[in-house]
Length: 213
Ligand code: 0O2
Image (cartoon, rainbow, N blue to C red; front, side, top):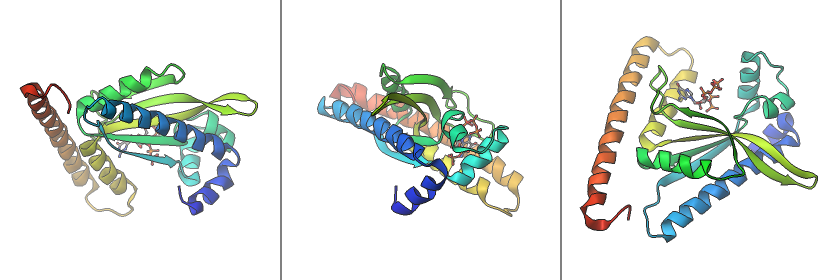
């Protein structure tokens, strides 16, 4: 995160910013170790890249108010789960589920909720797998479990979600219904392409190389 964003977020989150940054660092480290382990075994890296963010003050306050909660730092850190967000972008659909299982198998991470928007897409067409977690952070006074949200999806799903997110927050866009319909159509085409790419990957893997090399 750049210095400007840290200063802006400090205003709202105060010292809790350390917890949120700690949660993000903790998850990134675990993902990094998973990737290194897979690669050192000679297998293909299932992850394209990882993005992180701390939810902006404006967006967090809007969410808390929408949920009928006072827009305070305390509520942001304890009552909702996405103040600290990690997005894992995978190459293929199977990679998404593989990463989900590897994260779930980490015994000290508490899984609060799993949302499989790949098997059950949102009406908008949004597809992604969300893991809502509590991750342990070691502080001088002991361990504190910090809320975080991990979104895991393919490159294609991520591309779609970024574009749709941008449109959603753009003001005065004409033909919103038409655009929403077209985006939904794109989402379905992307889902179908993702499945075809996965099938091609499986065919290549089964032709003698013995796996994901
Ligand atoms: P940002 O900027 O990514 O933080 P809520 O968070 O209350 O709206 P809920 O039920 O708590 O909803 O969580 P949900 O819907 O499972 O996941 C919320 C997050 O998932 C959103 O966070 C988006 O990142 C993503 N998401 C969910 N639905 C859509 C969608 O239709 N389109 C896109 N592009 N993203 C979606 P934020 O806070 O909206 O945004």
